[in-house]
Length: 65
Image (cartoon, rainbow, N blue to C red):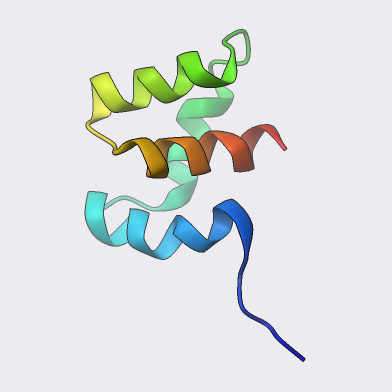
């Protein structure tokens, strides 16, 4: 059986290592902005918090799934 993490969650270890905060920190920030469209939240994470596009997109995709 293949237990490898797939999809947006596969980015989580790198996100925690790169930005020094637990994934839940980012998910909480995203959940506080439910009115925004996906790409608006991605852009906000990139501009306000310095996340890369792939990491921001993975977090938002996971949060909104």
